[in-house]
Image (cartoon, rainbow, N blue to C red; front, side, top):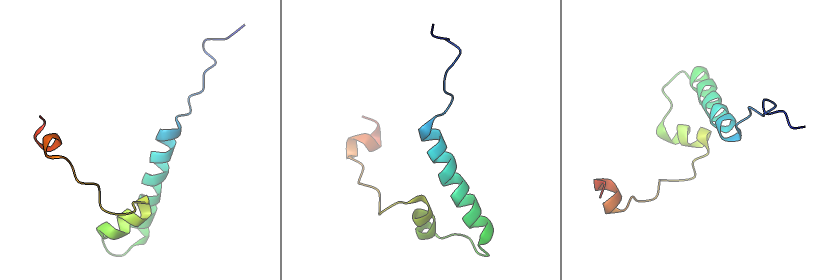
Length: 61
């Protein structure tokens, strides 16, 4: 019989976000200067500039 209260509370996406945030906090606390945007991108695993936003998306239309 299935127990309706026996559920997993693990959220893989949330755990990934927590890991990224933790990495950023650790890097910031170990740095004597403010982190540059490039350093933050590297820590977060961002490969490059974001893709351009279509004009319709910018105006909300």
